[in-house]
Length: 184
Image 1 (tube, rainbow, N blue to C red):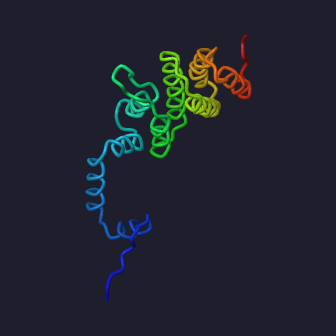
Image 2: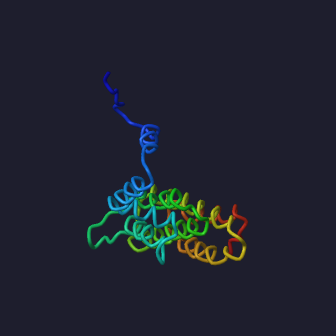
């Protein structure tokens, strides 16, 4: 009798194989996964709260892709800049960590656009969506933790004045919807 193997294995197939592992085998497998990629290391550090700053590797990736060094011919990528936030959400998903990463993304993106005079509507649309996500995340935090993040987001909002592409208007509207006052 032949053993039929699926051309496209699924999580169910992997899960069935994992049932055959003993504790030592499972730990060995996790050790190999840990050594295989930085993404897996970052995931495990965040999941288990290991290291002095579990957000540092995620922030480094955001900074690289949301605010690249144009003098080194680096390009920007919204998708690659957003990926660490999704990765962190899967790994640990702590609201304060998500608030920090989303606000940091907004700071990096706005800083980059102001520095280089970026003319990319898609980039600004993504910034607006992340700004909205950051506001929503921050507003779920306990009140005593919000002010720090709100002050930073207000700096982002204010630095968007006069950019074009409707950025100033969009950020002000999102600010109002969050129940915050736009000071003229």
